[in-house]
Length: 453
Image 1 (cartoon, helix red, strand yellow):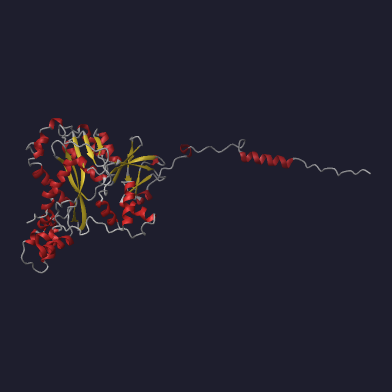
Image 2 (image 1 turned 120 degrees about the vertical axis):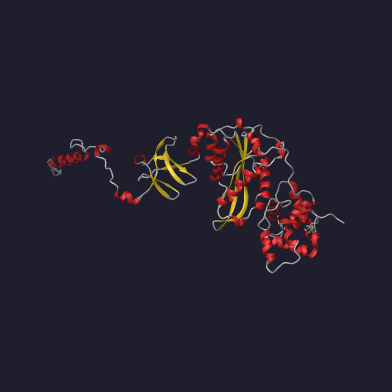
């Protein structure tokens, strides 16, 4: 008897509630499949965490017809054999041999341009099967191999990791939304310094989690993050620079650089998301309340094999003497997380933000200033010079109040108006004098010409 395929066992585990029922009532199959599709799974050979209802239904009918063996993946009958004409096969292999790093799309385009095949006739899958058959489907390995070694920071606070995990789709405030888990982890203790579900994965979401981490766990010496646009934001770089935190970017498509945090995400899916009741979630704060309770009361208090049996909280508390406190920066933390946007003050002493106008001191008219904004409240607070000097407060523009406002009108001397020109030095008067002098001169009549005989 042949062994059961691991993928068949996984598919049967997904069908557990369905496979154990001998009889289903009308409409019950559809309801159970819909519930199974809501749960995350550790899918073998895939980075996805969710299965579609159509896939689960297909597996169910396969199991009903053929049992556990029907759930095993069926190999292609034409595997290892190409149906392409020999001339086309030779042309594909020749192009690939000429440049082993050519992609399937490039090979297809070259053969069409050379007239070997007609446009749109050759499929990508046919080329892929041929390359696999001859063992040249992948480009040759790079000569430089990245050396990886297991490591751990000496003390808590030496190194933090930051990453975003795509969460499930939940109904938030009556609308189905995708949520994202933004987390920061301490390397030495595996402690989650702070984590929160957000409706996006922008720089603003990451900065919000970082701010709470700093308030709770002090300043790290180094922060390792992805190379995405959100982590490359100038605001995040400025915050880390002022707090003397070294910001380090991983190489693109290199999740192994943050292996401990990736492992936490795996545990999080298995132990938190699989136990989450979506019907109990009405607002984002409901989801985060459950997240924070699980992190503090379950994850932080559970013994960790990588910490010699200690819990993340115990390991972190053992290094409290090495943690860098915020110190004086705590009183200026809000100001550090404010965003600064360059604006030019209009002639009516206003600046724009988010489609609205705000008034600044009238003396700044025409100047370029920095608008200080609370990004979470989306509210302008003040204006500064380009060098950071405070220039005054910002107030929303009130058209009705300005209609009744008494405007200060400066005197001509205050606004620097030039005095009227004197009559002796006026260009207009000088032109008039020249005209009058020309008219006062007598007119001389020339004598008639004389003719000689």
